[in-house]
Image (cartoon, rainbow, N blue to C red):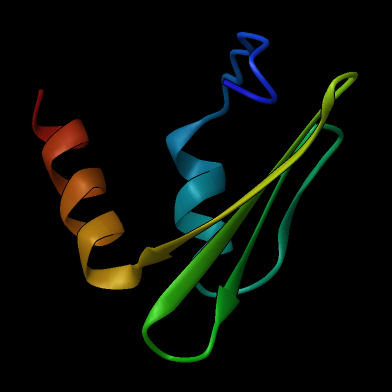
Amino acid sequence: SLDGAEVTWIFARELLEEGMSAPAGSGDVHIWPCGRARTVLEFHSHQGLALVQFDKIVLRRFLVRSYAV
């Protein structure tokens, strides 16, 4: 949710994986590494911007599990 408005972003796992090691993305989703331990995801919509940081280990675990499905 962004300022109370429901917004959905869909992007490829490959974009997330790429963004963990180098800046990646265009349009509404941008991903880049932030130091050695964090990854930043930036989401744009008409309602505004959402900026979220994740622990890189948690994202890597998520990706591994998503490919196992």
